[in-house]
Image 1 (cartoon, rainbow, N blue to C red):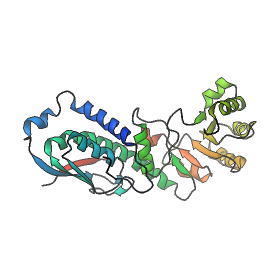
Image 2 (cartoon, rainbow, N blue to C red):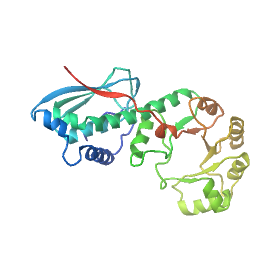
Image 3 (cartoon, rainbow, N blue to C red):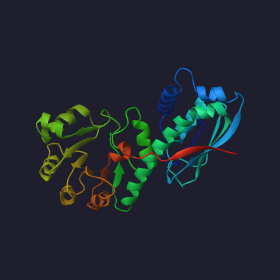
Image 4 (tube, helix red, strand yellow):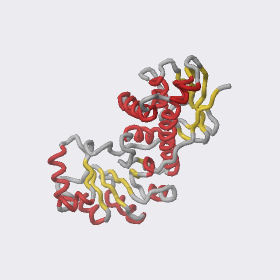
Length: 294
């Protein structure tokens, strides 16, 4: 896998150890204790063939490295040749990759490879749709932590393949003070002061607000405004007012109530970021299949 390059320039792939761990766990889950007993019983051990991975519908590709790892990890004699790249669009019926080699290995890895490729391509496709809806607005689409447990780095990679941006990866890489934190800490000012004292100068701080009054408190907090303010479930008028109040002093992120019918209007208010949980928790799988070459 180290010598494979299925990504477009500027799109960094997930680390190799994350790919290997995810694919290894998926193969172990599928093959169990005895391996593919169907293929092993009906396919000759020395049988070889060729296949193509094809898109059944139009979409944005993501996950080629995982598909390649699934095939080659199961049988190193299999060759995986990408026809497209992660981050590129494929037409319905379009070829994504070709596989050549032992039949048993290819069929044993097929479902694992297609599951990863279809899932991540679905996320990339949905992200690309949201990005297209706000093209030219100046706002960016970003994901959330509403991801499949164990697959976060891969799903966030798929968001980037779709043209979106990543929010924090976990609880340890940025401070995000939400409503429950504010209630427990006694308000915005004390929560921000405590966060600054604890986090250090390298960690960004974001505060969630759901009213314009809270926004004013965050902007006027002792020690200065946070790096980012999340405008949670605000209406369009309040979002526009929030942009005026902030005056470009902080990054503004709109969150809540975002879907295909609302995102363009939200972007038009002038916010910088629009976070969409549906990118990862509700994206439909892109229909992708493996077809034998006659």
